[in-house]
Amino acid sequence: MRRTVVAWSRCTLLCAFMAGPAWAGSADPLLLQNLDAVRAIHTDKDAKAVEAQNQRLDAAWAYFNAHAVEALPVLRQAVVDELASPSPRPFVLLDLGNFLYRQPAAPDKALAKRALLAIDAKAEIIQWNWPELFDFAHAVATEQDPALLPFLDAEFLRHDGAVEIPQHALTLHEFQVGAFLYGPYGRAGAEHLATLLGDAGLQKRVLEILSLVGGPEEDAAVARIVAPASDYPTLARVVTVLMGVGGPEGKAAVLRIDANSLAAQPRQWLEKMRPEVVKMSFEAVRQGAAGADKGQKVDGDALKARLEAMHDAYGKDDTLSPLAVLDSTLPREFLVGQLEGIRSRIFHRVSDEALSDLEVTNTLLNALRYRAK
Image 1 (cartoon, helix red, strand yellow):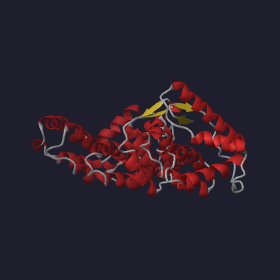
Image 2 (tube, one colour):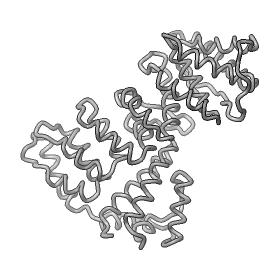
Image 3 (cartoon, one colour):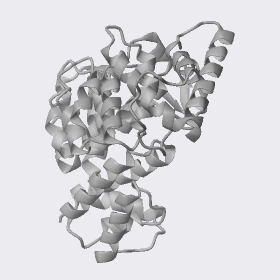
């Protein structure tokens, strides 16, 4: 699926063919005509004009797919030419770059990443096609390439706007978009986000993302945000991170917050929350899991195998009992390491099921950190 200007249109990406001969400028004129249709895409307030553009774009990609071997070298060269232009067209870099990244050859992926990093994400045409930019960036993020992180910081953390995933009837809010972009990096993604907490303009968004991708390693940086001037929304986000993914160190950090130093609203909220914070323990989480747990108990080598299978399946497992993990005799640190690896793999799946699996995984991770050993 790709979004073109203001509407989604279907096109089958060329993922099955290998590179053809280098293009020497002698391509089929119809192929070049269709490439020009991609280059000509622009925003338009007239609905009929937009629909006409979408139809031309659909026709172009249908042609490229039907003439796959001939099309790839031409499209590859088009990206090279665009990158060399003093004024590269953002939509060309987006649409052709996203396509090239789906090809199996490493040089195509490398060229596609250059295209992604060169996109002017603030261009109006890219704002209209934000879901495709997310799709492209997410695909690259699953490689855990650190070169992408500054682009994510600059373009996504400061962007206000949800992303629609129509094939899953799912709307990702901004912090969920961020989680799917930084989450695949695992520990490195969370550690990078923590370094951005000093930017007041990013704090709330970063805290929201850390509530899904963070861990105890970020507790100190998160707790340092709290100051007498902290408002309720900031304090609530801090406590959510510390209690949701911060383990016992996070709980201790919340209990150390001096409520008397805060303004009335955040102080009253924190005082109301404190009894629940004090109650947080491994047994409290275990009892909550036991109430709904009807899964088969698994331990030892069998549980190791199940966790490995979950990792390979990007976190999918509809039958493993949460209590099998919480009550396992396997060492706590081993289980935490396995679940952290599984969590980073869950972020490869952009779906509502992935969000549900993420919630369970974070609950297990946080509970295990309260377990004695």
